[in-house]
Length: 426
Image 1: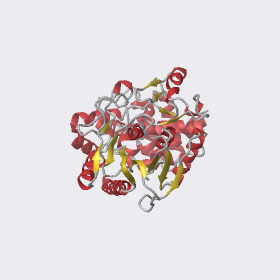
Image 2: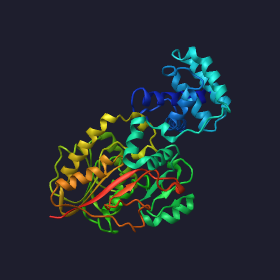
Image 3: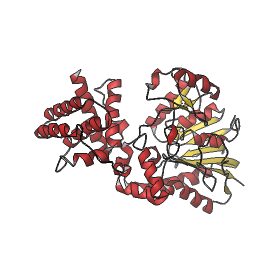
Image 4: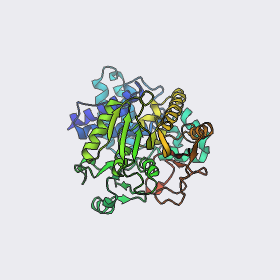
């Protein structure tokens, strides 16, 4: 048992190193030497350390004059995450961290320091710190510039909390029965919000493909494209930048003839697996949208454009520490290119929904205003503020969708998304 616990903590340290030292996505680090449940445990520790990284480093600075180099610093962070934020047995966290340090030649010399710091962490009074401490300065400044101090701080507070799992149903009629069976909450949008964080694959309906995991905000753009129930039935619909497939499955379940396009072959394999599990069908194409050309226009297009993904930081705390400010400009240029290209594939009278899971206005509101001013025949189709599927205050004065992690705190929050619904007037 002790060996297993040590391997789990070692896995968490490896994950921190992958993100903070090498800029990798946390989910791409396999931890193949650990069985599935233990991988999940290691991931949960690393997630918490990243979610509270600023607070953890601040408290460690009280006991360490200078943070040691990796992996020693990550061992300290894992220990602090367990003691401060995960209600783990302090002696186990300290002993585990010391064992890790002694086993690694790069950290062996600070094993005594790890032990001393761990003992002092136990029961140490920690002053309340602003949530922004867990966000890189450049990103915190960008959020404040876009949304003001109060709203930006509310977003960053929301990033500290573990999000619930949300499910999108293949058939909406299954919502109330399944919610009662598993004790979930049925949201007005039709999303099921699970209590706690259960093992997803063990839930009723998984093997039958009755639902898939998808944040409540991420499920909205496809609903906006449909508009009225049944409006997409038998329509030719393009899901552009489709992987890993949540929106593709939504559109297919609506009865659309879906073409799913994405350049990432690995993620598209996952999309195909998801379609097979849910017994839904779509034409799957692996291609770069900048080089691909359809034979005929589409009745409707959903462009969930590549973006900074800052709206998903509550689910992916590694993102804040991997993202670099100099990448935003290139993403904005790519979004602009894809939007213009997709517009050329839309049939006259058709509808296009442009969406990003970004909190930065340059990737959402400003992108759409620039497009509308430059594209003749493009018009906004405003959303209805009274639409029951939309969260309160989620429709902008211009008629677009804007959700943020600061919304719906009473039910566990929501990811940040922007979506604009456009029509081809000519």
